[in-house]
Length: 405
Ligand SMILES: Nc1ncnc2c1ncn2[C@@H]1O[C@H](COP(=O)(O)OP(=O)(O)O)[C@@H](O)[C@H]1O
Ligand SMILES: O=C(OP(=O)(O)O)[C@H](O)COP(=O)(O)O
Ligand SMILES: [Mg+2]
Image (cartoon, rainbow, N blue to C red):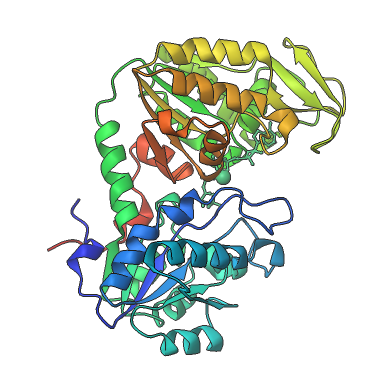
């Protein structure tokens, strides 16, 4: 990689701002972390900086609070977990300070008081609309906290936001963290010339974001399996009434184009053939299995793929030599709708001859919940980011870093 690495820099006694992706899955009320993979994966970078006597400032977004302060999306639960993890790694009673705002007087004062070898975590960057708008004034405020900027947030590297892109224009040195380097290096090698058959599995809830990558994926994969919340815009595009299922009406045209392109290119394009429907979006919803391409019963929504779809997708997965998976097959956080995601996780893990890559905050959480993570070749902290990387797009969070000269 031609980009500067944290290992190239002299960190001693400097304020080092590390952009991390602590956008971890939480319980519904936001009070507890359900999967801390993204925190654990940044520990090598944080420990490296501490060992080299940096004053470490950590910043992240959490969820999509849309530019407003919202306690539901506070990073406070992350401070507690980080303390425990660093205690365990570094020694007892390791303190992590927490600033209730990522910019302003308190953040400035707390960062000024940091000593070498100490850590400060800033509150959710997305409590300010300027973060996602990549506002230069806001980026400058973030930059004023530090002398060195490190981006270790691979999971957010596809975003050109103030803390991932803008900030680099206001600091002298911007470098990649160890997790960022590890992800780029692994994915770069694995996806340079993937062995075929190459099967991509897409699901999850970020339909409008991720439907964009399909066009480019169709030039690379032999089969594309679409489940989860992503599937219903496609089924609607094929003329099926999907009731109250997740639907992005303004992406129906994009979906139609993708279906046509897959056909023209001879890519096998699989959609669910049965579903587990719910009468409401809740863990205790009434359920029914629905099969075929007729209209869903009115007011019901699909929250999981059905057993025939698990079988159909698994048959495709068994024969693959490279598998990339992002996005759960259903609302696996509710036990009644976890079977599809767990079934696909097992099928991916059971294919011992394929290189398998599972990416995304929620997908990784699901694979761990299914107990098969150790049989996946690479667990990536990035969902959208790994898809855009696979597409061959330049990631703005990486592009913005200083060149190694
Ligand atoms: N059929 C569905 N309807 C609504 N939400 C769904 C459905 N299937 C999956 N999801 C949700 O998608 C979310 C994860 O999507 P996403 O963030 O895109 O994945 P990842 O974090 O793995 O990249 C999960 O919280 C899951 O509940
Ligand atoms: O969780 C994330 O992506 P993912 O759900 O695709 O894994 C990243 O933290 C990016 O979050 P965003 O999609 O709200 O910008
Ligand atoms: Mg997610």
